[in-house]
Image (cartoon, rainbow, N blue to C red; front, side):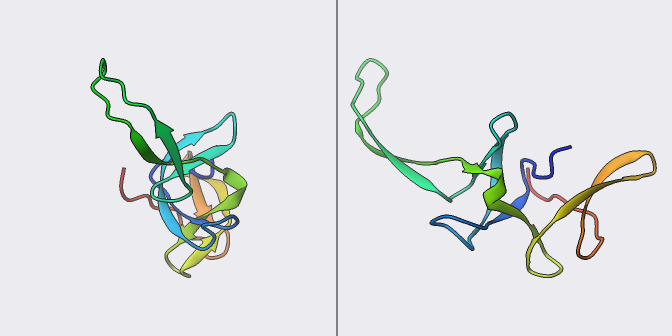
Length: 108
């Protein structure tokens, strides 16, 4: 079971955006990457393409981060926390190891 999913609020643990929070937009399971909204911005210079109706210029986009460089944000303690998996009523569920509270996802 993946411990970080789309819609989770995460904190960046390493890199140029260390300490910043954001919402996970997508998860690439095989490569172990996550894309976080508004963080790890990259720029690309694109040529204009009149056939497609695109104007050229500098385009900003979110680059993926490795899953080991982000941690799930725990509202109870206001910092990132480790996540475990356990069964409750015959279903798998994620919980924070520090507090034992289940992970509740709001958003997507």
